[in-house]
Length: 286
Image 1 (cartoon, rainbow, N blue to C red):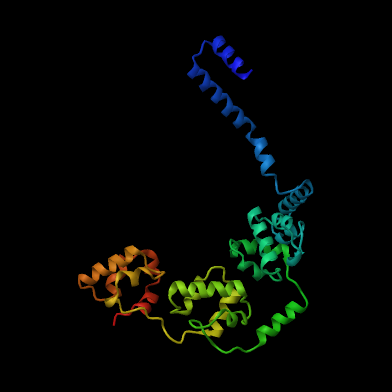
Image 2 (cartoon, rainbow, N blue to C red; image 1 turned 45 degrees about the vertical axis):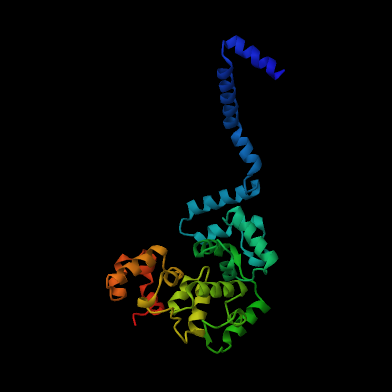
């Protein structure tokens, strides 16, 4: 039947076979574009219900009436304990759907959230997003908080950051299993920490955990790779701060009688220039 209508249309409009097929494809794409809003709504429904939208409208009205009262406007939606948050609650707080699902998956497979700083362990939640969430969240009170206070009041022996294992790191306050793995993984990339400033480069580290690492760890021995004059391409390119382009530039300049890092710095990539002080420790001049 479709073939019959196709031939009738060709005869009526006096089109050849190629022109008729082109018009059919044009009609198909036009219909797809016209219907795309309906398909989008079907596959990607709005994250807010009608009741949620009423709350958001009320929140906007309060913000317009009281522009300096941010606490009042945020309180209209909800203020909830962090361990009782559901996916819909994270959406109401302003997170995209994929992050809300990621939080639920983390709680199911790793551990329940007890405090706001636990959010730093979840990939994709940076400090700006967590600050956005804080007005909606309340930390878990009770035994967990008391245990946290006891843990912080304890005295710890200084740990050598370049030899410590994950179990010893997890014994420190504000450092859980996820963060301890990141600390050790970044240590492998660097071939060992050369400065405590490098702690701030660890992905997802909170200010509280950073202060704990600064206080309770030490660097007993600088992890020297080799002297800069005895370095080859593999030893240079293997370091996290240096690219292949940096390695080739350094070797070329050394052949041209460059003395040390002061002569090399200006030709390096921005990342290497930013960490030039640490590179001087990994690859000393003498």
